[in-house]
Image (cartoon, rainbow, N blue to C red; front, side):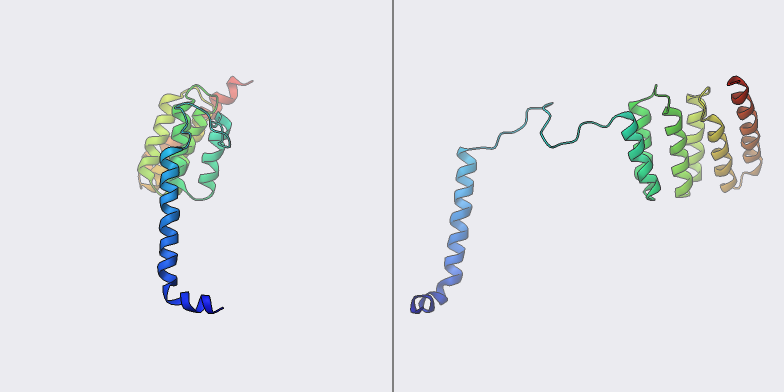
Length: 165
């Protein structure tokens, strides 16, 4: 007990020395026993594999539902870039338009819908692209172009339904 009483004034110094010795030991161990670094391209245990097309689209959709529209746009655009020939690539491009609509970025929504219409003219999401384009144009107060887009929905839907019968 008397021993602790005598060491009390030196306790901060002793703790500092202990910390310094442990730090020095860590540096020496790291220097002589470096960690195994992964080789580029090597899959590390415990990490998730790359996302497949369904997983990537679902992840972006979850972001959109959570109100993270800017991140959702990045996810949908990444899906379109990664899987441009997928059956759902046209849907993803239209979802980009929807995320911009929800964020109130009507001009970007129009551009995204136009990209879907231009890139996937035979896609089953084209009527929805025209519909969302109409909503965005209405938000931009361009009533005439909005009406044209809504009329295109009817034309494209009719043509799409007649091709499935």
